Image 1 (cartoon, rainbow, N blue to C red):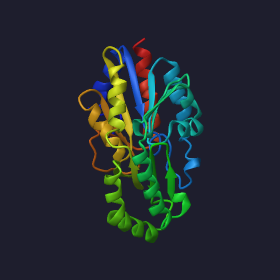
Image 2: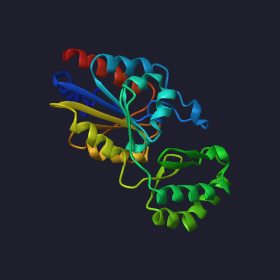
Image 3: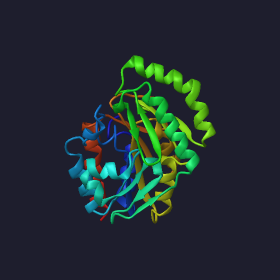
Image 4: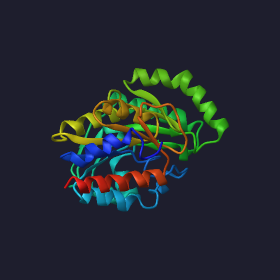
Length: 261
């Protein structure tokens, strides 16, 4: 969708007159392209400088990701200066390094261990990502045959174990994640907005199914934006193709925020 579209023009006007600009950003698939080796998922060229500039100019820039907060700081060094909601909102890391975290029960820990054992019997090690509050299982890091066998086994055994151990399972773009129930990126959005001050201009940029909770939370309160190389059905109101349209969006934000000074 063109960046001078009817959807964006009112938002840019609002940003120019708003007391606060709040930019909420997913990481993988949004700021950084997917990599089979998740430790190499660095941002698109030019992203770090723009995000750092927006934050330095007084915008509230918040990273909301399924990754642990520590991973985001490692991969995206400028994020260490930002507020980060990691593990789908189970962790909040403040710019001064203070970390607030949810707690897993022993029952939930046992459930995650059982799902991991199920996965390790079928999937290669690189397809299994342990997180502080969840277990992410990646199809991109597995052969199609092994992934299909795991998917069938998970349906036959894993789903019952998820329910028994008070967990939840959801799909994302490239896998399945088993995690704490009742906490998602939409909750992180609500928490940020509650402390957002008067009349903020807010946008959330994300790419996959886990970002839909955030899109829904922002409906009527800001602009939800899908950032993705290919279109998919979504609750978002705008679609940007990275990296060019994403970079243009961030540059326009910077220009409009300057006019509000």
